[in-house]
Image 1 (cartoon, helix red, strand yellow):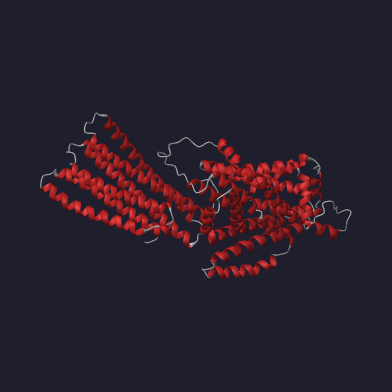
Image 2: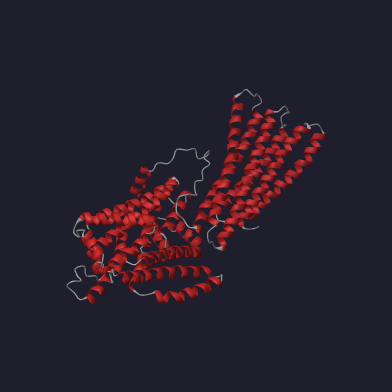
Length: 578
């Protein structure tokens, strides 16, 4: 076999994989946000969840993308794990559309048709407004060009006449159950090695269509590919959070269970699918003329696609009734890590190892920023509690003094957490921005980078207030008078209201958010700060408290006002106002 034919084979497989990736990413850029809303809204029960997973996967041509979206919704509390499992079942059906596209590419010479598509695609890309349609056309054209080249290369290699290859496949007993298991394992290993079920499907179609590989062994390879693709996602999810690992395990369980039951009805099931397509399994090339045998073999790519679809549909129809049991099983196998969520600074929604596309990564980052935002309000609540303890723990040796020191240490830890979260989220967004993104996604990433910077500033403001309270508590200055405590508590209440509004925005949809409410609270904080500043000068002059106490008092008031400014900056960034 010529070295150039081998390179041509590998190059056409690379074209196929690149085309599939480009096409999927272009589709997600065109419809990413809408698909996320559909996925969140149309999963009211297991059947709508399954249909939604099927439609979304067929739309974006990526079951991985659907799985990642689903896991993100589970982490956000928008979907239960049971609903997620139903969506993943649907994704398994939706991904079979790829096999039908490939079988069409294998059966007809479509290489001539891709060149006008390339030309139209480049025009659309330069029009900018329609560039995602152009990207999709380029991806689809690369996919079909890869398939066409693969088909022609397979013909040039004369696989059906290659005696060495024929002898290799003939060495396996076609009626043996062990042969089926060997090819099933081979399909799984090949998929795991090349990290592409589409590439393995294409190779199987070439081997079967050329007459080199018997249909039963070819379908065993396809079954192995179904398991191999779930091994990849499970390994990727190992470094992810609990729910991501459970979803990946549910996906593997679904496919492994399907392969086990299909093995019991292996030949009858395949014969049934062959009957649907019109393929004659009994035809032997030695007993019929070559023209009839080749016409029959040409149907094999459709047999593989039909089997892939029938297998996943039948498996879903069986297992959809047992989703609660599957959920219990994966929860029993994968136990949650026992960590204090409050004190754990790891990112919970951004999963480093789990495969995803840039458009979908933005959703995970947004959930992480929402978590960051909620954590900052909890930190501010601790500062308010610290102030209350400082006013009541007059005796440094009482129990409250111990509580004060413990709470201050916790606030210090939160300040470190906020620094870590800003750096980790920024690093993640930076890695996402390296990819080819839509303008909308680029704008979102810019806004998110500003949001995390301002949220970290909120953490700094909270820590500054805690240090001021601690300095006052451990120093020799007099205590605040009752009027000062009342003013600080009132200012902190206004600040907490602004944080509540910010978190309402971060957790909801900006279209329904009344931004004027945040601006009004900020205006109220500024006016109150100015009022207290003037009153403080008067009170110091009237000797109601010392200048030193007045300075510490105004430090807390000013820090609250700064915090309010940071909150407004977060709101503006999220709303896209500046």
